[in-house]
Length: 180
Image (tube, helix red, strand yellow):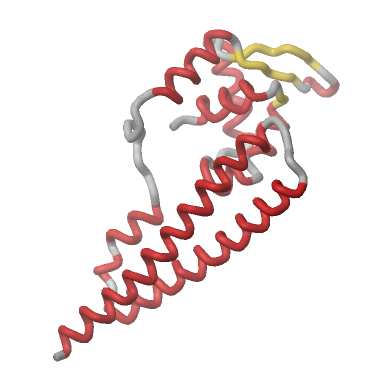
């Protein structure tokens, strides 16, 4: 995924200024999916406008610009969203750490996995709270689609939690059989 696809998606839902888009990356989008600051967002919007993917629809005070996705940008987003899954570049620090846990002593591995359990429990609680708030006050626009992402996140963290508990059991069993 690239920043341009994230911006195209946000702008396809609703036109926004660079400032408003930067704020989106400070919320759940940045926490759970893709991090980007204003120093990345503004130059990317300019590049995308030069490519005809977005256009400025309004200029306000202090050179504020509202951007909207163009037909060309909407087609680029559509192609990306409908492309087969798994074709993107994978850079997942958390999974890399899991691959490398064997570099630790077994008791350190269990400590790291317990940290993962606690982290997952915290995120599960947070996402359940967010889902309850969303259910109480149904939202529109970006927040409506955010409910799908929140449910995905909730299920993903539950699976991570369950896997980490299984892995702790596995390490403990293995450690017990090694010492026997």
